[in-house]
Amino acid sequence: MLEVKGLNAYYGPIQVLRDIDLSVPAGQIVGLVGANAAGKSSLMFSLAGLRTRCTGDVSMEGESISLLPGEQRVAKGLVLVPERRRLFPFMTVLENLEIGAYSPAARAVRHQTLEQVYALLPRLAERRKQVAGSMSGGEQQMLAIGRALMSKPRILLLDEPTEGLAPIFVDLVYQLIRSLRALKLTVLIVEQNVQHVLRTADMSYVLENGRITLKGSGQELLENEQLKKAYLGL
Figure 1: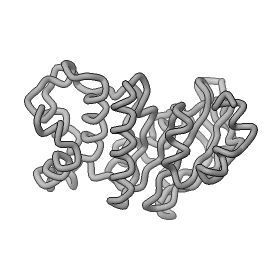
Figure 2 (figure 1 turned 90 degrees about the vertical axis):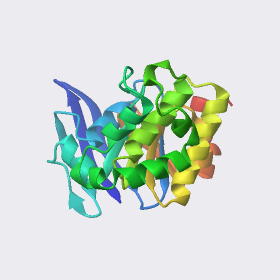
Figure 3 (figure 1 turned 45 degrees about the vertical axis):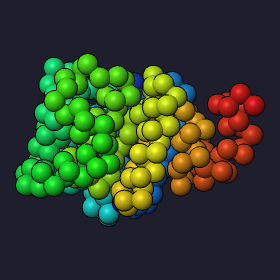
Figure 4 (figure 1 turned 30 degrees about the vertical axis):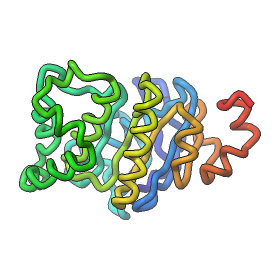
Protein backbone atom coordinates (compact mmCIF):
# COMPACT_ATOMS: atom_id res chain seq x y z
CA MET A 1 0.00 0.00 0.00
CA LEU A 2 2.77 2.44 0.96
CA GLU A 3 6.43 2.27 -0.02
CA VAL A 4 9.10 4.73 1.15
CA LYS A 5 12.55 4.70 -0.44
CA GLY A 6 15.52 6.87 0.48
CA LEU A 7 13.44 9.56 2.18
CA ASN A 8 15.35 12.54 3.57
CA ALA A 9 13.71 15.54 5.25
CA TYR A 10 15.01 18.92 6.35
CA TYR A 11 14.17 21.84 8.61
CA GLY A 12 15.99 24.59 6.76
CA PRO A 13 19.62 23.43 6.56
CA ILE A 14 19.15 20.77 9.28
CA GLN A 15 18.55 17.21 8.10
CA VAL A 16 16.08 15.37 10.38
CA LEU A 17 15.44 12.15 8.39
CA ARG A 18 18.13 10.13 6.64
CA ASP A 19 17.58 7.50 3.95
CA ILE A 20 14.31 6.13 5.33
CA ASP A 21 13.14 2.88 3.72
CA LEU A 22 9.92 1.27 4.91
CA SER A 23 6.95 -0.67 3.60
CA VAL A 24 3.36 -0.74 4.80
CA PRO A 25 1.51 -3.77 3.32
CA ALA A 26 -2.18 -3.44 2.54
CA GLY A 27 -4.49 -4.37 5.40
CA GLN A 28 -1.73 -4.51 8.01
CA ILE A 29 -0.76 -2.43 11.03
CA VAL A 30 2.83 -1.21 10.95
CA GLY A 31 4.38 0.41 14.02
CA LEU A 32 7.15 2.98 14.24
CA VAL A 33 8.73 3.47 17.65
CA GLY A 34 11.46 5.73 18.93
CA ALA A 35 12.44 8.19 21.61
CA ASN A 36 11.55 11.88 21.70
CA ALA A 37 13.17 13.85 18.86
CA ALA A 38 13.97 10.67 16.91
CA GLY A 39 12.13 12.08 13.88
CA LYS A 40 8.84 10.17 14.13
CA SER A 41 6.50 13.12 13.65
CA SER A 42 8.76 14.54 10.95
CA LEU A 43 8.37 11.27 9.07
CA MET A 44 4.57 11.33 9.40
CA PHE A 45 4.41 14.93 8.19
CA SER A 46 6.68 14.07 5.27
CA LEU A 47 4.47 11.15 4.26
CA ALA A 48 1.38 13.37 4.50
CA GLY A 49 2.95 15.99 2.22
CA LEU A 50 3.29 18.60 4.95
CA ARG A 51 7.08 18.93 4.92
CA THR A 52 8.27 21.51 2.45
CA ARG A 53 11.71 20.02 1.76
CA CYS A 54 12.11 16.29 1.19
CA THR A 55 14.02 14.02 -1.18
CA GLY A 56 13.48 10.35 -1.96
CA ASP A 57 10.27 8.66 -3.02
CA VAL A 58 6.89 7.90 -1.43
CA SER A 59 4.50 5.71 -3.42
CA MET A 60 1.03 4.23 -2.93
CA GLU A 61 0.39 0.94 -4.72
CA GLY A 62 3.31 1.60 -7.04
CA GLU A 63 2.31 5.18 -7.93
CA SER A 64 4.64 7.94 -6.75
CA ILE A 65 2.95 10.64 -4.68
CA SER A 66 6.16 12.47 -3.75
CA LEU A 67 5.29 15.60 -5.72
CA LEU A 68 1.66 15.80 -4.58
CA PRO A 69 0.60 18.39 -1.97
CA GLY A 70 -1.09 17.19 1.20
CA GLU A 71 -4.67 17.67 0.06
CA GLN A 72 -4.11 15.55 -3.04
CA ARG A 73 -2.60 12.77 -0.91
CA VAL A 74 -5.77 12.85 1.20
CA ALA A 75 -7.85 12.54 -1.97
CA LYS A 76 -5.84 9.43 -2.86
CA GLY A 77 -6.59 7.95 0.55
CA LEU A 78 -3.56 8.80 2.72
CA VAL A 79 -4.85 10.54 5.85
CA LEU A 80 -2.95 11.75 8.94
CA VAL A 81 -4.31 11.94 12.49
CA PRO A 82 -1.80 14.43 13.89
CA GLU A 83 -0.20 14.47 17.30
CA ARG A 84 -2.27 16.42 19.86
CA ARG A 85 -5.38 15.85 17.71
CA ARG A 86 -5.76 19.44 16.38
CA LEU A 87 -9.54 19.52 16.45
CA PHE A 88 -11.68 22.61 16.01
CA PRO A 89 -12.43 23.09 19.74
CA PHE A 90 -15.37 25.51 19.41
CA MET A 91 -17.18 23.37 16.87
CA THR A 92 -19.39 20.40 17.72
CA VAL A 93 -18.47 16.76 17.37
CA LEU A 94 -20.68 16.49 14.29
CA GLU A 95 -19.17 19.60 12.69
CA ASN A 96 -15.65 18.26 13.23
CA LEU A 97 -16.65 14.96 11.65
CA GLU A 98 -18.27 16.64 8.67
CA ILE A 99 -15.11 18.65 7.99
CA GLY A 100 -13.28 15.35 7.59
CA ALA A 101 -15.40 14.62 4.51
CA TYR A 102 -14.27 17.69 2.59
CA SER A 103 -13.01 15.99 -0.57
CA PRO A 104 -15.63 15.54 -3.34
CA ALA A 105 -15.51 11.73 -3.17
CA ALA A 106 -15.84 11.65 0.63
CA ARG A 107 -18.52 14.34 0.63
CA ALA A 108 -20.68 12.34 -1.76
CA VAL A 109 -21.00 9.47 0.74
CA ARG A 110 -20.64 11.41 3.99
CA HIS A 111 -24.02 10.35 5.41
CA GLN A 112 -23.22 6.66 5.02
CA THR A 113 -19.69 7.16 6.35
CA LEU A 114 -21.03 9.07 9.35
CA GLU A 115 -23.26 6.13 10.27
CA GLN A 116 -20.26 3.80 9.98
CA VAL A 117 -18.17 6.05 12.23
CA TYR A 118 -20.97 6.24 14.79
CA ALA A 119 -21.28 2.45 14.75
CA LEU A 120 -17.54 2.12 15.34
CA LEU A 121 -17.42 4.95 17.92
CA PRO A 122 -20.86 5.15 19.56
CA ARG A 123 -19.66 7.72 22.09
CA LEU A 124 -19.36 10.22 19.24
CA ALA A 125 -22.98 9.62 18.30
CA GLU A 126 -24.04 10.25 21.90
CA ARG A 127 -22.09 13.52 21.98
CA ARG A 128 -22.54 14.74 18.42
CA LYS A 129 -23.91 18.11 19.59
CA GLN A 130 -21.21 18.65 22.24
CA VAL A 131 -18.46 21.18 21.65
CA ALA A 132 -15.24 19.28 20.92
CA GLY A 133 -13.09 21.35 23.28
CA SER A 134 -15.24 20.33 26.26
CA MET A 135 -14.50 16.60 25.82
CA SER A 136 -11.85 14.62 27.67
CA GLY A 137 -8.51 13.95 26.00
CA GLY A 138 -9.47 10.36 25.23
CA GLU A 139 -12.78 11.40 23.71
CA GLN A 140 -11.02 14.02 21.61
CA GLN A 141 -8.62 11.37 20.31
CA MET A 142 -11.56 9.21 19.29
CA LEU A 143 -13.04 12.23 17.52
CA ALA A 144 -9.75 12.93 15.71
CA ILE A 145 -9.68 9.35 14.42
CA GLY A 146 -13.37 9.54 13.51
CA ARG A 147 -12.75 12.75 11.57
CA ALA A 148 -9.97 11.03 9.63
CA LEU A 149 -12.24 8.06 8.86
CA MET A 150 -14.75 10.49 7.34
CA SER A 151 -12.14 11.12 4.61
CA LYS A 152 -12.51 7.48 3.47
CA PRO A 153 -8.81 6.66 3.97
CA ARG A 154 -7.07 3.68 2.43
CA ILE A 155 -4.11 4.16 4.73
CA LEU A 156 -4.34 5.89 8.11
CA LEU A 157 -1.32 7.56 9.72
CA LEU A 158 -1.65 7.79 13.52
CA ASP A 159 0.88 10.09 15.21
CA GLU A 160 1.19 9.41 18.97
CA PRO A 161 -2.51 8.49 19.39
CA THR A 162 -2.20 7.63 23.10
CA GLU A 163 -0.03 10.54 24.21
CA GLY A 164 -1.26 11.91 27.55
CA LEU A 165 -4.27 9.58 27.74
CA ALA A 166 -5.52 7.74 30.82
CA PRO A 167 -4.89 3.96 30.71
CA ILE A 168 -8.55 3.19 30.00
CA PHE A 169 -8.44 5.32 26.85
CA VAL A 170 -5.10 3.82 25.80
CA ASP A 171 -6.82 0.43 25.81
CA LEU A 172 -9.80 1.84 23.90
CA VAL A 173 -7.56 3.36 21.23
CA TYR A 174 -5.84 0.02 20.66
CA GLN A 175 -9.16 -1.79 20.58
CA LEU A 176 -10.20 0.66 17.86
CA ILE A 177 -6.96 0.09 15.93
CA ARG A 178 -7.55 -3.67 15.99
CA SER A 179 -11.11 -3.07 14.77
CA LEU A 180 -9.72 -1.04 11.86
CA ARG A 181 -7.44 -3.94 10.92
CA ALA A 182 -10.48 -6.26 10.93
CA LEU A 183 -12.06 -3.82 8.45
CA LYS A 184 -8.96 -4.22 6.21
CA LEU A 185 -7.81 -0.63 6.72
CA THR A 186 -4.05 -0.14 6.47
CA VAL A 187 -2.50 1.68 9.46
CA LEU A 188 0.92 3.19 10.17
CA ILE A 189 1.18 4.14 13.83
CA VAL A 190 3.91 6.17 15.54
CA GLU A 191 4.19 5.62 19.28
CA GLN A 192 6.39 6.02 22.32
CA ASN A 193 4.16 3.43 24.05
CA VAL A 194 6.45 0.67 22.81
CA GLN A 195 4.85 -2.38 24.39
CA HIS A 196 1.34 -1.53 23.21
CA VAL A 197 2.32 -0.91 19.61
CA LEU A 198 4.63 -3.91 19.31
CA ARG A 199 1.93 -6.22 20.67
CA THR A 200 -0.56 -4.86 18.13
CA ALA A 201 1.45 -4.27 14.94
CA ASP A 202 2.13 -6.89 12.29
CA MET A 203 5.52 -5.31 11.57
CA SER A 204 7.46 -2.55 13.33
CA TYR A 205 10.43 -0.27 12.77
CA VAL A 206 12.68 1.50 15.27
CA LEU A 207 13.71 5.09 14.45
CA GLU A 208 16.77 6.61 16.11
CA ASN A 209 18.28 9.99 15.27
CA GLY A 210 16.42 10.14 11.97
CA ARG A 211 17.42 6.66 10.79
CA ILE A 212 15.71 3.25 10.79
CA THR A 213 17.90 1.04 12.97
CA LEU A 214 15.75 -2.06 13.53
CA LYS A 215 12.78 -3.75 11.93
CA GLY A 216 10.90 -6.97 12.52
CA SER A 217 7.68 -8.45 13.80
CA GLY A 218 6.34 -7.13 17.08
CA GLN A 219 7.40 -10.30 18.90
CA GLU A 220 10.91 -10.19 17.41
CA LEU A 221 11.40 -6.61 18.59
CA LEU A 222 9.91 -7.30 22.02
CA GLU A 223 12.59 -9.99 22.43
CA ASN A 224 15.40 -7.81 21.04
CA GLU A 225 17.93 -7.10 23.79
CA GLN A 226 18.93 -3.71 22.35
CA LEU A 227 15.31 -2.57 22.28
CA LYS A 228 14.54 -3.92 25.75
CA LYS A 229 17.42 -1.95 27.25
CA ALA A 230 16.71 1.26 25.34
CA TYR A 231 12.93 1.46 25.63
CA LEU A 232 11.55 -1.09 28.05
CA GLY A 233 13.95 -0.60 30.95
CA LEU A 234 14.80 -4.31 31.06
